[in-house]
Structures are given as structure tokens and as C-alpha cells.
Image (cartoon, rainbow, N blue to C red; front, side, top):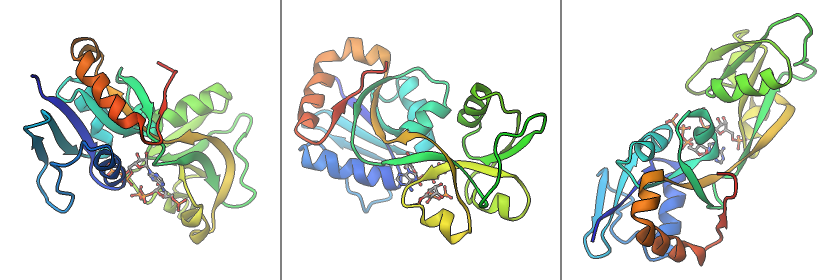
Length: 214
Ligand SMILES: Nc1ncnc2c1ncn2[C@@H]1O[C@H](COP(=O)(O)OP(=O)(O)OP(=O)(O)O)[C@@H](O)[C@H]1O
Ligand SMILES: O=P(O)(O)OC[C@H]1O[C@H](OP(=O)(O)OP(=O)(O)O)[C@H](O)[C@@H]1O
């Protein structure tokens, strides 16, 4: 029997994915406290690799991993083509445009400066609304940008709103919701269909939902 390879994100999504897999009887080979990056379950023929959250889609797209757990944010930000099979019900947050109170985001004939970890998503969002923007790509601590005059607004994930509040920012416009998805390589889905389906059946017992937007 072939191994099914699953890419998990290091950090918060990986921690949640581990809990889900464990509860579904699939994550027994993972030691969440170890710094190891590969865990193999020889009996169940499942192996897990731990990668950066933004790299999960790349591993799945290239077929190195058959399946992966990735946030909808990183799926949309990458231009990779993978199946979204299940909404896993965790990693829930939303995209928002945020800035200091009263900041205007639709400025006719003016360019809006947008700082973000998500340039692709931001560009598409403002293109669709006819607002010209200048993108400032950051890798974290995005909330700092409007405070120091690097940008007018940010596009970022908001969960509790605590980070925005702590930095004197607020949501100016809600964009859309984000959560963690089980994604699948398109070739694996055809050639390892039975094994992937068995695995999905184990997860069905948990609070997961099928995705329909493939
Ligand atoms: N505040 C949040 N609440 C819930 N889910 C979140 C939140 N922030 C991020 N996420 C989800 O968790 C995923 C991973 O976030 P995490 O903070 O662990 O990594 P990261 O800092 O974005 O990764 P990297 O190290 O690649 O920059 C995100 O892609 C998103 O789907
Ligand atoms: O609304 P909240 O509950 O405060 O959560 C939102 C924060 O969580 C994420 O950051 P993360 O913790 O991943 O740090 P980062 O700046 O490295 O992206 C996101 O980029 C926000 O900064």
C-alpha cells in the first residue's frame, strides 16, 4: 500500500490539525513537542511533514504531499491549483481593511497605500472596486505600518480584534471569512482516491464540512 503524505503547518494551524487528526485516530505518530519535521505511521501508511504555513500549498501542488491543511488566506494568496476538500472548522478569522479611525479607503484619483502580507488578495479586492493602490509587502507586524506612516491602511486577518485595538486601529471594511481547509493534489485525488476517501471518512466524524467551490 502507498503512503499518503500530509503537509501540516508549523504553529497555530498545525496544532489544531494535530488535535483533529488525533481525535480522528490518524495522528498517533506525531509528537507535537518534537522538533522533527517528518512523522511516519508505518502501520496506517500515513506520513506527515511540517512546513511553514505559506508553504503547505506548494508541497501539495507539487505532489510531494497528497494532502495538506492550509488557511484559505494562503490558498488564495498562492496561484497554485489544488482541490479544497473539507472546511476543517478551525483557524477561523476574517480579512479586513483596517486603519486609524475615519481613514477613507475609496479615494477617487488618489492612490491608497496598502501594507499587507497578502498582496495578491489585496490587489484583487481593490481592483474589483476600482480603487488604485500601492502595495507595501510586509512579512508580519503589519499593524505598525499606518502608525509610522508607511501606509494608509492595512489588509490583514482579524480574529478577536485585540491586535488592532492595542495599536489604535479599527476595521474600516470587512472583506471575507477565512478558515482552515483540507486540500488535495489533483493527481493524487484520482490515483489515490480510495485511500484519500478512507481518510476523509475518518474526519467526517469531526466537525468538518465539504467544500463546494472547486
Ligand atoms: N488571529 C488568527 N486567528 C485564527 N487564525 C489565524 C489567525 N492568524 C492567522 N490565522 C490562520 O493561521 C494560519 C497560520 O498563521 P500563523 O500565525 O501560525 O503563521 P504565520 O505567522 O502567518 O506564518 P509565517 O511564519 O509563514 O508568516 C494563517 O494562514 C491563517 O489561516
Ligand atoms: O484579531 P486578533 O485576535 O488580534 O488576531 C489578529 C492577528 O493575528 C495574526 O497575526 P499573528 O499572530 O500571526 O502575527 P504576525 O504579525 O506574525 O502575522 C494577524 O496577522 C493579526 O495580527
